[in-house]
Length: 401
Image (cartoon, rainbow, N blue to C red; front, side):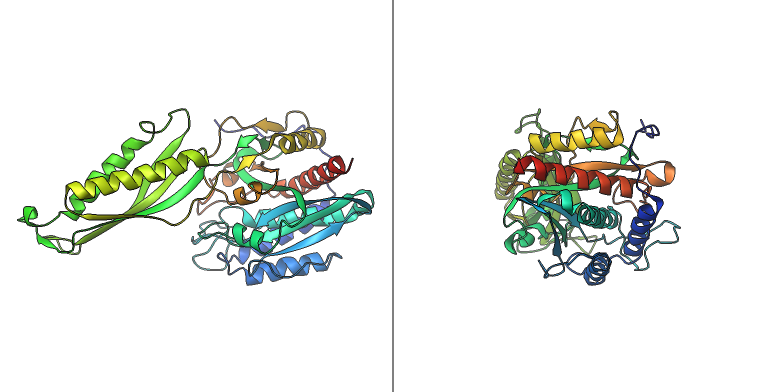
């Protein structure tokens, strides 16, 4: 069922000039997407925008990332707000005048909007610094989409030094403009890509598979067994999904290849279940390889933890959303997403929350994330910027009290 658009929320709408500023910035960023750790033009564009508005972006972090700090007139703690910067390796299929000008690269996950919202947060907080307690650190992170991701590098480079809490927002095309998705606890899944290699050391004739190890058949046996694991060796009340997305092996129609590779992702609603399931995958694959005389290797690139929102910070966001956007604006999300998000690394270090901001208002803006026709209603930009400014300033005031 498609969500209904909120039209009666008593939001204190920003002036048209703010909406135009943010829309123009988002379209500039959208038209010039860059992949992870390559966001040089992106970073320069954001830095220039912030500098032109009286802010002072700091030194590079994690290569192309950086932070900008807004110091309040009153003493207090430091709260962080994060935006990701990278685009996806995807050809854009929209006909928007601001569509990607870079072949094979597209902002299909809303990171252009995330950066724009963060710029709005920095600008609005700067204008309210006389009433601020403490410091708001708005930071821009490279490479959320691929592994190894940018969050651990940002942490290594000190982005969380002295920080008491961290916030972020993600666009959501399943929610209407004016809605804000909230959830305490797990918001996203813990994820891990995997690659399985089945090797026999020698190829064989298709007429005589008994003379070699049939690597394709063995790989198929392993894949069939892996699909049985979720809900059988894991608690069915804790969602898990194993998906195989790639298989490669063989060149001829009458030669059994000496090696086959297949891979995909394993996702669980909590990190503990994922750790358990990764070991089960390794043991099952290895055991089947031993039975059928093949060497089997299971490689995990990394383990991405689940985003786990802390309840007090979600409550701060909930109250701000209701006050600014109306009582019906705050939507309690009943289930976590099975997607992954490296904001999880920050929330392993400090309390905080990631919110979902509704960006849908019609068919054009309801394509899912990572779709080649993904786009959003830009009316959500000033709403999100004002909301997240309020959330961060309320958090600062509460901690300073």
